Length: 146
Image (cartoon, rainbow, N blue to C red):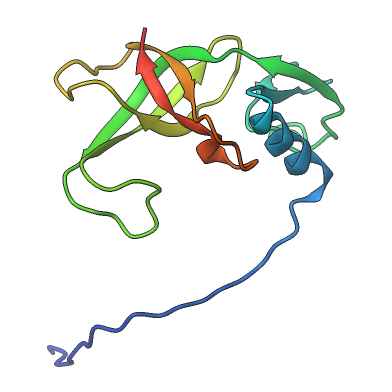
């Protein structure tokens, strides 16, 4: 039995506001100061960035703060040749999972000033900050190869 149905294309606009809470607020305030804040779990000692309210493995409150490194290595990446709805930049761009030095999770951000042929797993990168800060993830313009 086959199904026959049609589709339509429509643009849906859903504006919303959400509360950042004290942990993500502090993390984003750090962006304005060119600092990347992380939390260390008091039980398993993993360092997580962006900062979390609780450890996703141990389910304990994350009370210990520390500044994460602004350098790390590419774990995985993807190049976008077409514009992507909601992306902070126009195509072409490179999105990457970056393991900042001393952390135990991946940080999603952009890579700039590099040809896609130069980027591979293990490529060392460092944060390049925008001059104007707004207290958001885009205060880091992108990461550049070291």
